Image 1 (cartoon, rainbow, N blue to C red):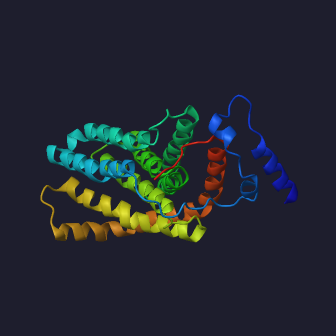
Image 2 (cartoon, rainbow, N blue to C red):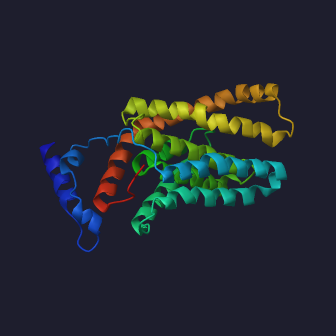
Image 3 (cartoon, one colour):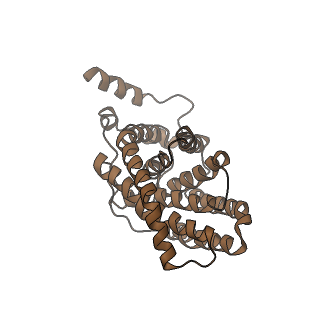
Length: 280
């Protein structure tokens, strides 16, 4: 163990010449915390800035309006709605870079997270609702902030549906997975969610019922009828409960296994290269 800690401390002390930017050079890395494989800690309660309110407005007001508009004009416009959703998902992310341009390494890490979600969903296509997408989205939101969590969630749904078939459900899935990443990032930032295995896995389990199911079940009803009723909504929730339960249990298990190693490694990469400053 001592040899391993020494190796990690030496590894994270090494700053590659010519690749570390001024932010990294001016911000020493906490080699003790990284070498002991310690989980990242929440920031605690922070007041919301005007930028955060703008981001929430885009996500919680504009996106539902776009989905509603797409539903009103007909299902055949789902590709246009999906593209508009994609543009709106990029707005909160790029607002993080108000004072500087995004770095290539930052975009590469996000692209890898999206690719992991798409690959995980594709690899387990034979097991309905058993997918690691929500787990990866939650990890992204905690590690890089709610804006990135929303972007990873929405992009994973859009890209993976290139293989699973695009349809009127795509904008709803983009919004549902994005909201999971947004909630995880905000709850972590405010100190409501900690990265203990039990707490994180429980959050993943509940997010499927309280966020994904709360969005996708009414979506299923709206995609099959133009005159939704309360009885129809109740029937959809009851019929979808077994699938949501499988999805929730699989998310719990994926977070139980993947959260600690992924969060630790993402935090090391982020600190080493000074990636995506998360502010309120």
